[in-house]
Image (cartoon, rainbow over all chains, first blue to last red; front, side, top):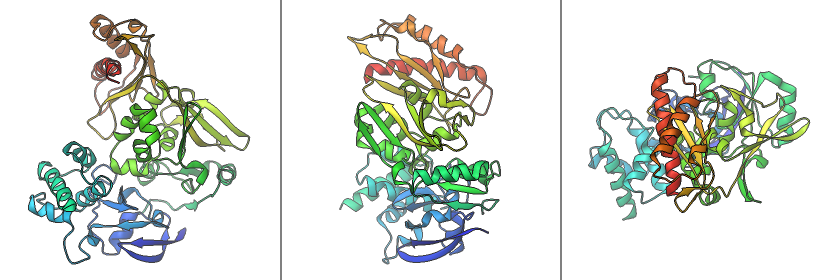
Length: 156
Length: 282
């Protein structure tokens, strides 16, 4: 297999890795125990595999692992690294924005990316940003409520 | 899951290096930027390449500049960069709005406009509006560079005029159009029908016929003659009914998951009317 040596930062930890060119980011993460990002639609449609690459949300299922080279990736596992839930996670709990939880890591990472680029979004902006993140349990309303609640928490 | 087949990854630092790789590797290589279309097709085994030429590290393909009445969009510029770029938002708000509604936020963060055009997937948003605006593609290859109207670059489904040793260097879009809007209907991940309108109103009356282009229905963007609107007012129901009919007849839809032929003709008429009427709000 053709492979490439990359230097990257995964959840804050800098590392040098040898990755197969044909390897996908989702597998690189899950093989390292970072299983929050889920394989689901496998075609950039559902959002269950969303992680932040240099701050922006991407579908890890359709991103080459070598794209980590010189860049930084963050997954849901990193959010409570300080011992406390991230405000987005806390808001999801408070607003009951999850049931089965399968889509939740992707939703949380997508919401976090939004609030980092737009700290006080309108309800319409939240809805638009979350289009393309599919949830089969909640009907979306509590998720949008949670993102708006998280925005308030982060501003406080 | 890995991609089904192995490939060499090339990361040229300059356009010249990329062109040389194109010439050397020929059909065994694919140009690669965001990967939002290419990697999907490779995952499914529909496309298979021994080499990928990554264009993202070429500084000359980055950035958006606005000069001489034109916006120049580098080939490595993503949809998200376009939707948020101050020059695009100021000079071509209709294009910024279109970009803001391409696919989803993840695809917009990774995918590039040039990749979208080069892949020539018929169910795409940007081509209709860019054709209506008179956009051009700047192609560079072993023989030097050339420019083509986007309308001529797009040949058919997944088919363009891009030469075997060429790559898209930039997309050039004239600015200063009085109004440019895009309206689409979409329930799946790609648009079923999208209609672009570019035109000018003076005192509530169309000053000349607006340019109307339908995307996502046929294999390539289709122009609709809108002479009936020259001199018409925004509330001229007869003229708009004639436009809707002309638009519905201009396309040649096929039945697919986005809808039946009749349904798509109907949508095309409705969206043509809405897009042109929206020029009154610009």
